[in-house]
Image 1 (tube, helix red, strand yellow):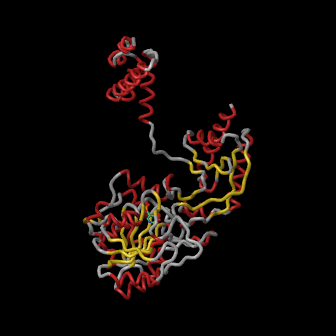
Image 2 (tube, rainbow, N blue to C red):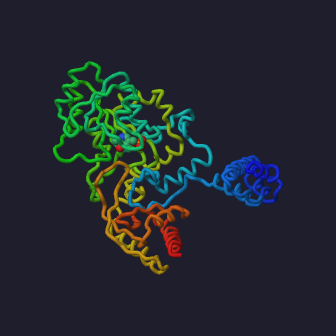
Length: 461
Ligand SMILES: *Cc1c(COP(=O)(O)O)cnc(C)c1O
């Protein structure tokens, strides 16, 4: 019986003769259309075996059309971040400044002086553009840019400590998230992990004993805790103490700063995140940090420090494998120029968001409430907290005003906001769907409100 019905399923050839299919071929190409028809017919065969009826030819073509549209719908798309988490790793970390975006656009249209020295008229190096600015801003003797900070740490450890020992406090054997674990990166580099101290307390003598006990220690590593806080009965030598110890034994200190701020976060009512300048001044040999955390630039790993240690990294084979592209480098250059010009707080979005006064956020929240209320959406304003995110300043918060969408089904509303174009990512707190204006760019406001209104109205219906 089923076998008989299976034979009645149309062939790809028959469906190709339909007018609807011809339209698909025009839009998506013949090869993709044939593939889609085959997939649909395979699925239908399974359904018929399980007892379903055979859809008519027009329905089969329509199903193939849906498949093709799905295939061509981009999955990496801009979204509106209404979560209030400023450096949201899942949402692409730092938004770029206007100058950085425009420079990327200009450089992507044609050719660029990427590895060309315009003065000398000969071959140059791709990372010199950002390096000269990095040295100027941080006071370091030398700088190098790679793909991301995980790569920067891997490169430093591989080049400086392969087959040798690296001393690190047990309190710093951290997992940053997204697969970056200090012990694993160390293993990958070929360095031998020499853990000292305990989870909560590590003393200078722990480091000293480890150095005395081994004759192949290459360096001392300090890793910033980044995404967690150690409180209570805790202690850890300062970077300064480690550098002094290093001097006594002729060992360089590598400082994985993680976020790597160039400005003082305490200006904005937050705790003080260690700055790159402080590490340079303290005398760390090599300092690694991210380009897209508190720096507010593109994804990149930045290495600065003493020329004697950083310069050799530039010619290491791994460096070639980790090299950043021209779009990253031009965005980084423009981001760094904001700091050189002293305009980072106004121009670099992550700093602008951190610096936004509560009164400004409250004004925006009230404007949102009015617009939504007039459209018949039930909203309230609530006090709340924004966070910096990106593995920096754990537990630190910025007071904010949240726009709460009053609905008995916050999950369903959140889902339909994600279906909007552009998708809106909100947060659910106390069973309420909250929008934090702090991380929503002013130019996104109108489309956000329109889409919230549409989604909320749909829920009512
Ligand atoms: C974020 C972070 C990293 C990883 O940096 P990526 O730029 O994401 O590769 C490494 N170490 C620390 C301490 C971090 O905070």
